[in-house]
Length: 272
Image (tube, rainbow, N blue to C red; front, side, top):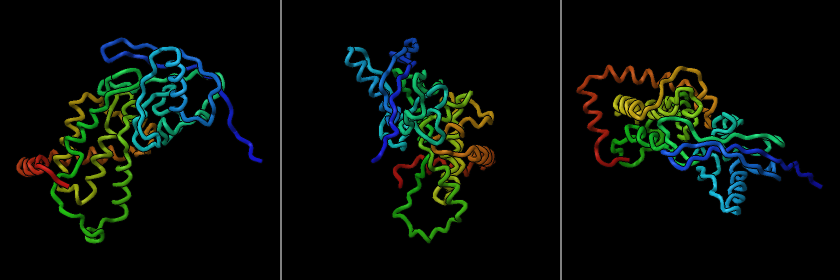
């Protein structure tokens, strides 16, 4: 006969409520009873919203999509930690067993100038999309995919590139950084492609374009405290920031003629 480890919690929630970006926000207090420790954090918020709707109150707006720890949409700061107390975990994969009965849980949106609040816990993270559009892709027409063994790539390069490619672009690095820096995100995207043959033709224009767009969006500077790595649900290493700095320095030394050719290539229509 199996015994369930499920327990029920009574919780005090302090949730950030804000009508829109132009309005002044504030914390609202809510009490929840009988919350199962087997629930996910987002399921707990669903229960809160069901209760608010039943009382004809406005539900709390929060972002979510896959709820499988893949998309990173579940961007919440929980008791001062991006995505909550578990390392290498998104909010949707955080379970209520990490909290205790009677605990007060403070829930906030990402705090960054470049991530303006849309409503309540939802922020506009389209700044990341614009950084990707500035160079985080391969635009060269490659035709059909070549046979895998025709382009030999060493095991170390493969692994380091894939370590960077796991970044899900959630923005936890920005939320955790005291300067709201996006260096970990940008370095992951640059490092991923810079190490592969497919990314070589646009190597210089890519890093210059993406760093330039990052600065234009208003993200802060990196001061190497590594909070970004600690908060990252994909465990992306700050070592990629070092590679980004090297790539940027080398790109500044590329001749204007070579760089112009790269920029023309990256602005071409279509591509695979």
